[in-house]
Length: 28
Image (spheres, rainbow, N blue to C red):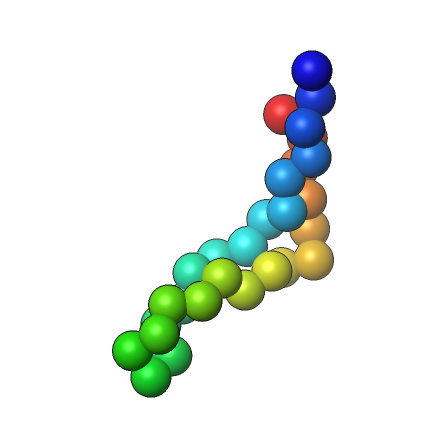
């Protein structure tokens, strides 16, 4: 089955790790 994944990256802001979406996606 194919799944679509949102591309993003993790960044640390004020000690909190958050995932920021890039607006792109890929299908695996």
